[in-house]
Image 1 (tube, one colour):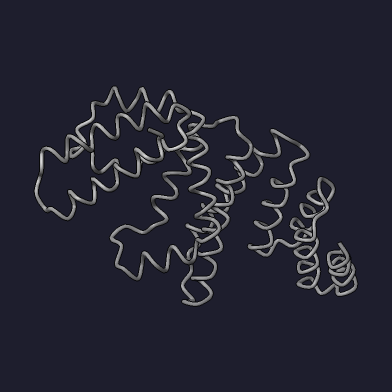
Image 2 (image 1 turned 30 degrees about the horizontal axis):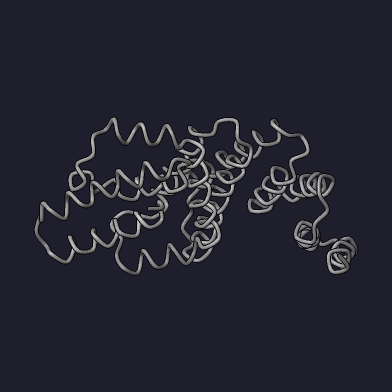
Length: 245
Protein backbone atom coordinates (compact mmCIF):
# COMPACT_ATOMS: atom_id res chain seq x y z
CA UNK A 1 0.00 0.00 0.00
CA UNK A 2 1.36 3.48 -0.87
CA UNK A 3 2.16 6.19 1.68
CA UNK A 4 -0.75 8.26 0.31
CA UNK A 5 -3.23 5.41 0.85
CA UNK A 6 -1.91 4.71 4.33
CA UNK A 7 -2.13 8.38 5.33
CA UNK A 8 -5.65 8.58 3.95
CA UNK A 9 -6.67 5.63 6.12
CA UNK A 10 -4.84 7.23 9.06
CA UNK A 11 -6.95 10.39 8.90
CA UNK A 12 -10.14 8.38 8.51
CA UNK A 13 -9.26 6.54 11.72
CA UNK A 14 -8.45 9.80 13.50
CA UNK A 15 -11.86 11.06 12.42
CA UNK A 16 -13.51 7.99 13.90
CA UNK A 17 -11.71 8.56 17.21
CA UNK A 18 -12.70 12.22 17.23
CA UNK A 19 -16.36 11.42 16.58
CA UNK A 20 -16.36 8.65 19.17
CA UNK A 21 -15.34 10.96 22.00
CA UNK A 22 -13.78 8.11 23.97
CA UNK A 23 -10.45 6.30 23.92
CA UNK A 24 -11.14 3.26 21.79
CA UNK A 25 -8.02 1.13 22.25
CA UNK A 26 -8.66 -0.78 19.02
CA UNK A 27 -8.86 2.40 16.94
CA UNK A 28 -5.80 3.84 18.68
CA UNK A 29 -3.86 0.67 17.89
CA UNK A 30 -4.95 0.97 14.25
CA UNK A 31 -3.80 4.61 14.09
CA UNK A 32 -0.37 3.79 15.52
CA UNK A 33 0.05 0.89 13.10
CA UNK A 34 -1.03 2.98 10.10
CA UNK A 35 1.35 5.79 11.02
CA UNK A 36 4.28 3.41 11.46
CA UNK A 37 3.52 1.82 8.09
CA UNK A 38 3.20 5.24 6.46
CA UNK A 39 6.61 6.26 7.85
CA UNK A 40 8.15 3.12 6.35
CA UNK A 41 6.41 3.60 2.99
CA UNK A 42 7.40 7.28 2.82
CA UNK A 43 11.13 6.57 2.68
CA UNK A 44 11.86 9.94 0.98
CA UNK A 45 10.10 11.88 3.69
CA UNK A 46 7.67 13.71 1.43
CA UNK A 47 5.04 13.65 4.16
CA UNK A 48 7.29 13.99 7.18
CA UNK A 49 5.76 17.37 7.95
CA UNK A 50 2.58 15.49 8.82
CA UNK A 51 4.23 14.30 11.98
CA UNK A 52 4.70 17.94 12.97
CA UNK A 53 1.01 18.56 12.32
CA UNK A 54 0.14 15.54 14.49
CA UNK A 55 2.61 16.38 17.24
CA UNK A 56 -0.17 17.25 19.69
CA UNK A 57 -1.53 13.75 19.29
CA UNK A 58 1.61 12.12 20.68
CA UNK A 59 -0.24 10.78 23.72
CA UNK A 60 -2.86 9.31 21.43
CA UNK A 61 -0.41 7.80 18.99
CA UNK A 62 1.94 6.48 21.64
CA UNK A 63 4.95 6.43 19.32
CA UNK A 64 8.37 6.03 20.86
CA UNK A 65 10.67 9.04 20.41
CA UNK A 66 13.32 6.90 18.77
CA UNK A 67 10.88 5.85 16.02
CA UNK A 68 10.00 9.45 15.21
CA UNK A 69 13.64 10.59 15.28
CA UNK A 70 14.69 7.75 12.99
CA UNK A 71 11.96 8.71 10.52
CA UNK A 72 12.83 12.39 10.50
CA UNK A 73 16.55 11.64 10.08
CA UNK A 74 15.79 9.30 7.19
CA UNK A 75 13.59 11.92 5.59
CA UNK A 76 15.82 14.99 6.07
CA UNK A 77 15.47 16.27 2.48
CA UNK A 78 11.74 15.69 2.49
CA UNK A 79 11.37 17.54 5.78
CA UNK A 80 13.21 20.59 4.39
CA UNK A 81 11.03 20.51 1.27
CA UNK A 82 7.87 20.33 3.38
CA UNK A 83 8.89 23.31 5.51
CA UNK A 84 9.58 25.33 2.37
CA UNK A 85 6.19 24.36 0.94
CA UNK A 86 4.32 25.32 4.11
CA UNK A 87 6.08 28.70 4.35
CA UNK A 88 5.58 29.48 0.64
CA UNK A 89 1.87 28.75 1.11
CA UNK A 90 1.83 31.15 4.05
CA UNK A 91 3.52 33.86 2.01
CA UNK A 92 0.99 33.52 -0.83
CA UNK A 93 -2.03 33.64 1.47
CA UNK A 94 -0.78 35.56 4.50
CA UNK A 95 -3.68 38.01 4.88
CA UNK A 96 -6.35 35.40 4.22
CA UNK A 97 -4.85 33.03 6.79
CA UNK A 98 -4.44 35.72 9.46
CA UNK A 99 -8.00 37.01 8.95
CA UNK A 100 -9.44 33.49 9.09
CA UNK A 101 -7.62 32.48 12.27
CA UNK A 102 -8.46 35.75 14.00
CA UNK A 103 -12.12 35.43 13.00
CA UNK A 104 -12.43 32.01 14.67
CA UNK A 105 -10.73 33.25 17.82
CA UNK A 106 -7.35 31.54 17.62
CA UNK A 107 -5.73 31.81 21.05
CA UNK A 108 -2.20 32.17 19.68
CA UNK A 109 -1.43 34.62 16.91
CA UNK A 110 -0.70 32.67 13.70
CA UNK A 111 2.55 34.57 13.13
CA UNK A 112 4.08 32.91 16.19
CA UNK A 113 4.04 29.47 14.59
CA UNK A 114 5.29 30.86 11.28
CA UNK A 115 8.38 32.30 12.97
CA UNK A 116 9.01 28.98 14.70
CA UNK A 117 8.78 27.11 11.37
CA UNK A 118 11.07 29.71 9.81
CA UNK A 119 13.74 29.24 12.49
CA UNK A 120 13.53 25.45 12.26
CA UNK A 121 14.00 25.67 8.49
CA UNK A 122 17.12 27.76 9.11
CA UNK A 123 18.49 25.05 11.41
CA UNK A 124 17.61 22.28 8.96
CA UNK A 125 19.09 24.00 5.90
CA UNK A 126 21.91 26.34 7.01
CA UNK A 127 23.53 26.43 3.54
CA UNK A 128 20.35 26.61 1.45
CA UNK A 129 19.98 30.02 -0.26
CA UNK A 130 16.33 29.37 -1.14
CA UNK A 131 15.54 28.77 2.53
CA UNK A 132 17.09 32.15 3.42
CA UNK A 133 15.01 33.87 0.71
CA UNK A 134 11.81 32.30 2.07
CA UNK A 135 12.69 33.28 5.63
CA UNK A 136 13.63 36.81 4.56
CA UNK A 137 10.27 37.19 2.87
CA UNK A 138 8.51 36.03 6.06
CA UNK A 139 9.99 38.97 7.96
CA UNK A 140 9.43 41.32 5.01
CA UNK A 141 5.74 40.44 5.06
CA UNK A 142 5.68 40.86 8.82
CA UNK A 143 7.10 44.37 8.41
CA UNK A 144 4.35 45.11 5.86
CA UNK A 145 1.74 44.00 8.41
CA UNK A 146 3.30 46.21 11.10
CA UNK A 147 3.44 49.23 8.78
CA UNK A 148 -0.18 48.76 7.75
CA UNK A 149 -1.22 48.50 11.39
CA UNK A 150 0.69 51.71 12.21
CA UNK A 151 -0.99 53.48 9.30
CA UNK A 152 -4.55 52.45 10.21
CA UNK A 153 -4.25 52.71 14.00
CA UNK A 154 -1.81 55.61 14.24
CA UNK A 155 -0.03 53.57 16.92
CA UNK A 156 3.78 53.29 16.55
CA UNK A 157 5.43 49.86 16.65
CA UNK A 158 9.01 51.04 16.36
CA UNK A 159 10.71 48.23 18.27
CA UNK A 160 8.87 45.46 16.41
CA UNK A 161 9.46 47.16 13.06
CA UNK A 162 13.19 47.58 13.67
CA UNK A 163 13.50 43.92 14.68
CA UNK A 164 11.57 42.75 11.61
CA UNK A 165 13.72 44.93 9.34
CA UNK A 166 16.98 43.65 10.86
CA UNK A 167 15.91 40.00 10.61
CA UNK A 168 14.86 40.37 6.97
CA UNK A 169 17.97 42.42 6.12
CA UNK A 170 20.35 39.87 7.65
CA UNK A 171 18.68 37.00 5.79
CA UNK A 172 18.74 38.73 2.38
CA UNK A 173 22.37 39.80 2.89
CA UNK A 174 23.20 36.18 3.73
CA UNK A 175 21.63 35.10 0.42
CA UNK A 176 23.78 37.61 -1.48
CA UNK A 177 26.91 36.50 0.39
CA UNK A 178 26.19 32.96 -0.85
CA UNK A 179 25.52 34.14 -4.42
CA UNK A 180 26.55 37.65 -5.49
CA UNK A 181 24.17 37.33 -8.46
CA UNK A 182 21.10 36.50 -6.40
CA UNK A 183 18.10 38.22 -7.97
CA UNK A 184 15.88 37.24 -5.03
CA UNK A 185 18.37 38.58 -2.49
CA UNK A 186 18.62 42.02 -4.09
CA UNK A 187 14.87 42.15 -4.75
CA UNK A 188 14.20 41.40 -1.07
CA UNK A 189 16.51 44.23 0.02
CA UNK A 190 14.94 46.62 -2.49
CA UNK A 191 11.44 45.90 -1.17
CA UNK A 192 12.68 46.21 2.40
CA UNK A 193 14.19 49.65 1.81
CA UNK A 194 11.06 50.77 -0.06
CA UNK A 195 8.94 49.86 2.96
CA UNK A 196 10.94 52.11 5.29
CA UNK A 197 11.11 54.93 2.76
CA UNK A 198 14.84 54.67 1.98
CA UNK A 199 14.28 55.14 -1.74
CA UNK A 200 17.92 55.63 -2.76
CA UNK A 201 18.97 52.28 -1.30
CA UNK A 202 15.84 50.73 -2.79
CA UNK A 203 16.84 51.97 -6.26
CA UNK A 204 20.39 50.62 -5.86
CA UNK A 205 19.10 47.18 -4.98
CA UNK A 206 16.46 47.14 -7.71
CA UNK A 207 19.20 47.94 -10.20
CA UNK A 208 21.31 45.10 -8.82
CA UNK A 209 18.34 42.75 -9.07
CA UNK A 210 17.74 43.79 -12.68
CA UNK A 211 21.41 43.25 -13.44
CA UNK A 212 20.94 39.63 -12.35
CA UNK A 213 17.56 39.08 -14.01
CA UNK A 214 15.45 41.63 -15.89
CA UNK A 215 11.81 40.98 -15.01
CA UNK A 216 8.58 42.97 -15.49
CA UNK A 217 7.93 42.61 -11.74
CA UNK A 218 11.15 44.36 -10.68
CA UNK A 219 10.80 47.00 -13.42
CA UNK A 220 7.27 47.91 -12.29
CA UNK A 221 8.38 48.18 -8.68
CA UNK A 222 11.37 50.33 -9.63
CA UNK A 223 9.04 52.56 -11.66
CA UNK A 224 6.89 53.01 -8.54
CA UNK A 225 9.94 53.98 -6.45
CA UNK A 226 10.91 56.64 -9.00
CA UNK A 227 7.30 57.89 -8.93
CA UNK A 228 7.54 58.21 -5.14
CA UNK A 229 10.76 60.20 -5.60
CA UNK A 230 8.96 62.51 -8.02
CA UNK A 231 11.03 61.47 -11.07
CA UNK A 232 8.18 60.79 -13.47
CA UNK A 233 10.46 60.58 -16.51
CA UNK A 234 12.39 57.57 -15.17
CA UNK A 235 9.20 56.13 -13.69
CA UNK A 236 7.50 56.13 -17.09
CA UNK A 237 10.63 54.74 -18.74
CA UNK A 238 10.77 51.65 -16.50
CA UNK A 239 7.00 51.20 -16.56
CA UNK A 240 7.00 51.23 -20.36
CA UNK A 241 9.84 48.71 -20.47
CA UNK A 242 7.95 46.37 -18.15
CA UNK A 243 4.84 46.58 -20.33
CA UNK A 244 6.84 45.75 -23.47
CA UNK A 245 8.36 42.57 -22.03
